[in-house]
Length: 166
Length: 196
Image (cartoon, rainbow over all chains, first blue to last red; front, side):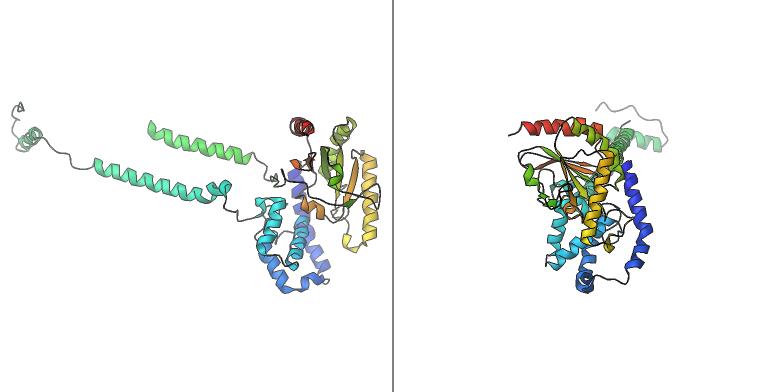
């Protein structure tokens, strides 16, 4: 509860103070931010990453302080010439798969990735089995000779003859 | 009868999934660092300016690394427990003072020179420890939070239990509760102390 309150306070503070600090620093862009290629890659990568403080925000959109620190780290890694995969691995090694909005496919996430398809396949198989069973149930029943005779007798509106011993 | 049992069964499965899901704290992200060697660092000590500490100095001991800051409200909540625990002579606790100045929203750290930031950090952290008690064997200063990132810190306080070989064996996210100390940290620490 306390942890939650702490996080909420952080998020609220970040939201409240964000615009202020933005306007305060608008004129003083750091030399790092001068390179538009680096910035574009930073945004592309950090949109795929989750901010751990405000968990429903991406690293690109969050104003939480940790997000700011992590963006600085990612910017440095880009400038060091690291690939996108290497940068993501760097963050996963520290914060776990949870930082990725797109979880990797591995045995522990098979249920997550393939579960819905397995569920769909199961449902289709169930439906096919049910339809087949129903189709076989409504097939016309074969009448025995005796039944046919009694039906004909009923239709002819005459009292049925005693049944054949056969 | 069977017609009702199947949906009821499915509903119960759903209820179990929801019950587990809703009772988990989404802010407790399992750390990938548990079972891995504690990341190396070399940071200046709070009490001895100019002297550094690194986790390798604790080789051969079972110890706790506790991330704290004077602006952190939850740290204040867990602090009396740490102080009492250190008086009993439990485990050595190393404090990682995390972004003492930069983490405080009330200060514009960008306007401070590195030297000013260092002295302000020492002053604030020292004052806080003399006011609330100092449970730490020593504290180190992570002023820019770089070491915090290596340890996957995303909310202070966080505590790591590190074994004799320098491997992280447990991570407590958020304040240490008496329950977590008694039921998780201490039993594991005893077990780790017995390991060679």
